[in-house]
Image (cartoon, rainbow, N blue to C red; front, side, top):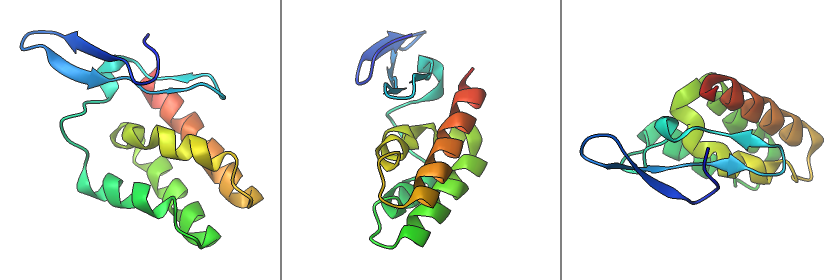
Length: 106
């Protein structure tokens, strides 16, 4: 395991991988799950929605990311920030999404 922001060269061709750690919840993702080269455009749009002023948009984006499993690992940092959201439903949905990401990364 690595720490947040560490970059590791792994395997033939030395792919550079970003390792995500959500320190507050102890969520760790092995390097093989996140590549910095490309984020799925749908996941990128959902990550943008996590900072929407409307709580229902943030909640729905977190829920959608939860359903995308390993494809959504790039959203872990943004989901981590939602654990401090003013809306309790948004916080709960972000926690559920992070729990799901932890399961698929294990």
